[in-house]
Image (cartoon, rainbow over all chains, first blue to last red):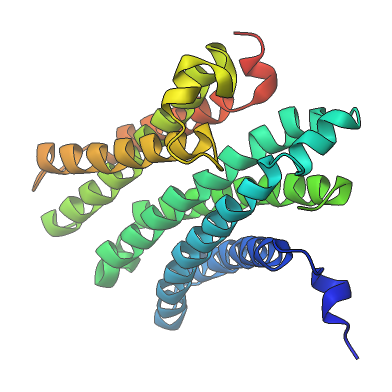
Length: 162
Length: 111
C-alpha cells in the first residue's frame, strides 16, 4: 500500500509543496500537449487547444499561488534559505531560487496571452497563419521557462525540502 | 485576408506586447531592488508588501499592474486598427529576452 507520508512528507508545508510541483508538472505537460493541437489542423484539435489553453492559465496560476505559499516557509528563520547559507550551499539560492522564482512567473502571462489569442481568433484560427505561428513560438518559450523552473525547483528540493 | 481577421490579429499582437512590458516591469523592479541592497535596501523594503514573502510580493504586484496597465493603454491606442503584427512580435521577443536577462543572477552581479 502506498505510504502517503513517505511520498508527500508530514511537515506543515509538504502538501502545499507537493501541489506546487504537481501543478508545475501538469503545466509543463499541457504546454507540450498544446504544440500538437496547434500543429494539427483539425477542428477537433482546435477544440482541444481551447480547453488546453484554459488549463494552462489555471495550472500556471495555481503553481504560482502554491509557490508563494511555500516561499514563506522557504524564507522563514528555520527554512531552506538559512539552511543553504549555513551549509555553504548558498549558490542554490542565489543562482537557483533567484532565477526560478521569476522564470516561473513568466509562464502566467504567456498562458493568458495564448488563451486570449486562441479565443479571440476562434473561428478564424485556421485562416490566420500568423496566429498559429505566434502561439507555437509562445508555447516553445513557455516550455523552456517551465522546464528551467521545474529543474531548478527539483534541484533545491533535492538539497532540502521546505 | 479580411479586415476582421487583421483587427483580431492586432488585438492579439497588442496582448503579446503588453505581456512583454509587464515582464519588463517585473524584472526592472527586481533589478532596482537588487542593485540597491537587496531585501534590506530601500527598494527591497518598499516592495515588501507581505512580510513572509518579502520583496518578491511587491515585484509580482508591480509586474501585474504594469502588464494590465500596458494592455489597457495599448488596447485603447490601437482599438479597431490594423497593425504591423510582425513588429509587435519582434518587440515582444526583445522584451522577453531583456526580462530574462535582468532576472539572470550572474548578469545582475555585473551591474
